[in-house]
Image 1 (cartoon, helix red, strand yellow):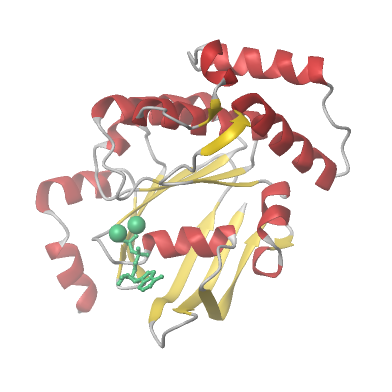
Image 2 (cartoon, rainbow, N blue to C red):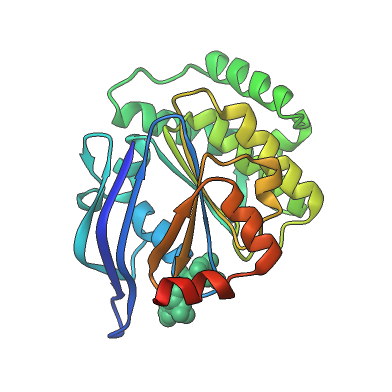
Length: 252
Ligand code: ADP
Ligand code: MG
Ligand code: MG
């Protein structure tokens, strides 16, 4: 699904190398987690994959299925099936949530050469998904994220993900200070979208989230590299002992 090889990334404006050779292969239908101390480059990795500006790839590659991701603009990446849940969802006053979602869904369908959904088809789909995610119909009518509580923003993000039906979902929850309820929402949303084909990369500073989203593979990132890869037990090791032992071990 996603294959990252030897990815090196520096800041565009400064001579600062942030990613120093990231290798990561995610098979279809699997959930991978990346954990690691603050400042390791976890968010940078997700930004670079989504096509956010300000970073320069100095070496390596990233492929999504048969696409060379790094050659594509952000819209094309999304149309190819990549979804990045933003840590800080934007508020868009004056644009209704429904309109926003329908525009997003249809512009992706168009980019893929598929027919756009009619108003009726879209309404049916969004109502079904909203219901299954326990989202109030009233929230669909409000302007995008304006005045939404933290939990509502999270719900909305999961609804966007459900409507766009991405193949590869990246969730960067690192610094968002998810409370227990928001964490449950995110994990229920992710679990509901697991279908044996769709893949997930869950980036988190905390082990707690992984109690709810059971990852298949856990990676530890430090100083711009993945220093250790293992199963779910690796997350529990971090929970018990912190990162110090893992970092010391990687230095040898
Ligand atoms: P993490 O998500 O693991 O906490 P980040 O990817 O946010 O790590 O940051 C990795 C390193 O790169 C940090 O040292 C951070 O300060 C630096 N960094 C990332 N983006 C920028 C930026 N736009 N300007 C300056 N420093 C940045
Ligand atoms: Mg950070
Ligand atoms: Mg981060």
